[in-house]
Length: 87
Image 1 (cartoon, one colour):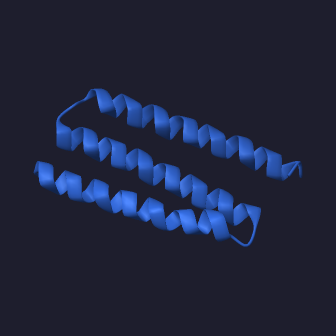
Image 2 (cartoon, rainbow, N blue to C red; image 1 turned 60 degrees about the vertical axis):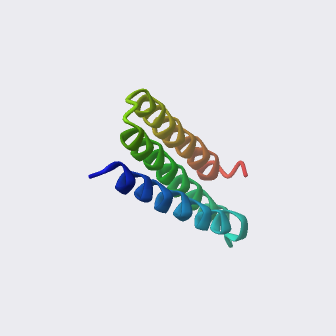
């Protein structure tokens, strides 16, 4: 893939994340909001990785990996709160 293809793919991921913001804001339940937030963080991490490939800067791959791992841990913590009915 060329650099422009990576950039377009990263732009699509960002637009998808922006659409998920509506689900986070208007979700009928807390669970829907949590799933949308987790999907949005996954889309954002993928956009960071695609940008790293487009810019040919491997240091951004570390940023994307850290972002994805911390967003996963955040989803686990929120799920535990929901499971124990603390929210």
